[in-house]
Each structure stands twice: as C-alpha cells, then as structure tokens.
Length: 194
Image 1 (cartoon, rainbow, N blue to C red):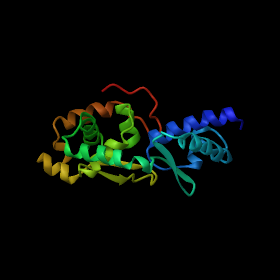
Image 2 (cartoon, one colour; image 1 turned 180 degrees about the vertical axis):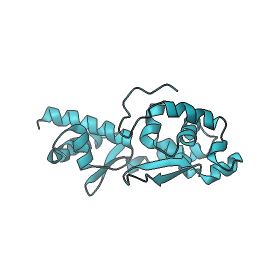
Image 3 (cartoon, rainbow, N blue to C red; image 1 turned 90 degrees about the vertical axis):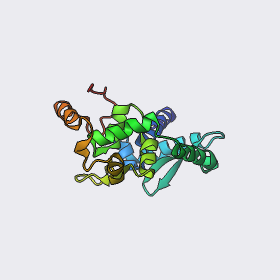
C-alpha cells in the first residue's frame, strides 16, 4: 500500500471511528475499507501521527486488536465543564429527539439512531444514560451490538407503567411496521420519511 492510499484510508478510518464512537477491531476496519488486515496498522499509524500534532483534540486509544477515537487528556477540563453544564440544564433538543427515537423505536442500536438523526449520537446517548433516562442492553442475537431502551426511571418520571402508554405509540408502531427500517451498517443510506 503506497503513501497516498495510506493517507486516504487514514481519513476514512478517522470518519468511521468518529461515527462508530466505540472500540472497533482491526478486522472490522479491514473489512469496512476492503483492505488486508496487515495494512490496518500502517493506516492507524498514519492517523495517529496526524492526530498527535499540536492543537488536535483527539487521539487513538488501543486495547489489544481494537482501537477507539477519544479526546486527549489535555482537554479533560473543557470536556468536564461541557458535561457538567449539560447536566445542569434542561434536556437539549438533540437529547429530546434522541429520547423520542429510543422511546418509540427501542430497543434500538446507536447506528439506527444516528441514521435517523443524521449525526453521531454517542455523546447524547451517554448523557441520557448518566441522567438515568436510557439503558444500554446487549442485542439478544449479536453480542457485539448494544441496544438502547428507555429506563424504568423515565417511565416513572412520565407517570406511565409501560412504553405502550406513550402518546400515539400504536399509531407510530403501525406506520413503522409499513416502513423498512435500516439494518446495522446501513447508516449511509438516505433516511426513509415517516
């Protein structure tokens, strides 16, 4: 693999890791990019060098044969302030939108939430989990996928005993039953209108 291909693939890996928001295996990266696994190290090395320049806020975190895009420790204070401010305020429109998707479509993988919202929802989901409004559970058929669902605390806060008591829940379920929902990995398709 030449330098130009490494640089091109390192940009693709940065985008993938940003969107995915969780650790990703070298094998999965190779599969997504359509490259050989032994080239993944060179691509990650180039990305790591680019991220380690002065002024960049992100870096790569490695654990075995997995990698994740994370914030640099130098910016902990700024990130902590953002998170603290976020929790002292009311829910943002992004949080309400995400919470609605989890409520009406859940349990749902983050990739589908990202698909419907058109943006990475990792930060918003994490804040909703910290507030106790959303729970993260394992997918029953695939241990590598996490699903998000509303928490018991949210149901208690809303004064309902089950998710089906949400306003117009059955109406939305009927509409959604007629639509093809995106599958895991189909986050780049044009969203279906509801």
